[in-house]
Length: 345
Image (cartoon, rainbow, N blue to C red; front, side, top):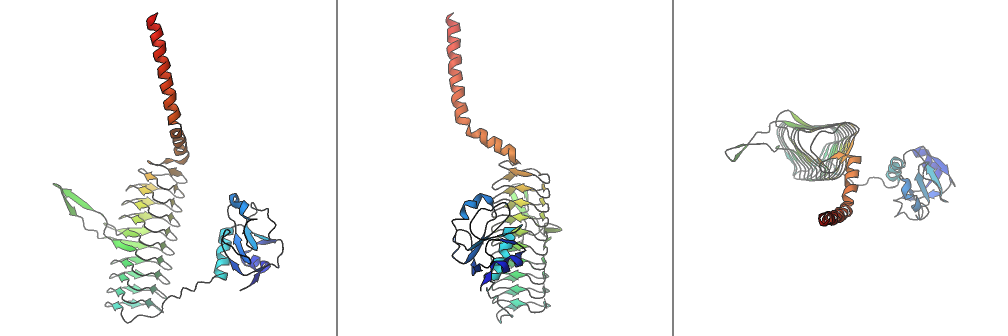
């Protein structure tokens, strides 16, 4: 496929600076781009790469200019580049179609139009699958589970009983949805299991990464809000509620009954205790340990998690500890010398 820079600019609603007739034959990252490729620059601190890249043209914003190459200026270079990638490298994954003869179907299963069920998948009794649902090989869907239209479930996903999954949800391999919450009553040193009889509700347009575990509620439901994206290897405890359009990065652990607001970002390996609230638009940076609630529109970091700038000051002070130690040691020596002089007098 070949497109001129002018044609691409119309697609992404951008403004061409330079030769609009430049032919583009592919798209790639700014470091890996070859001749004929178009690339993008979303962060001005990487502006030095604009003249080093072999790309024929660059999509950028108005605050990241300064190159002899043709550019397209747009408000959101990252989003614009997503459209370009889709044009030059269309998704040809080739999802399976139809119901494989080895799939095991329970009683009273309700199937929408054009449902796909891969080899050796097991569909429990009274399951409802919406239109264009794709279930890859080796999946388990428990009884009374409902899955909305256009949802994509990759191989080896386990979805337990009575789970509710919305439309256009993507669940990657190895995820376990609806496993028992970690609930035990300890009596005389013995741990007695508390039944976990709630459900998991996953709303529309959620994406769940590989090997994510989402526990069913003890009572009521664990909820993942519309548009939330969850990275690989995340653990979400029972009765957790996550709002809409939040980002949960790899290896985050959220203990039971925590409430996460809308548009929250939890950085990689952050750990949250149970029964706290993270307010809307809050950011928890990577490897933070959150032991108390976080107000809306706040960034916290560190262990224990504090307001971001407080943690920065604490870290800066820690860097000065060797100097402070030496200073105290020197002052102590001087005080001892002064005390010795006074004693002699």
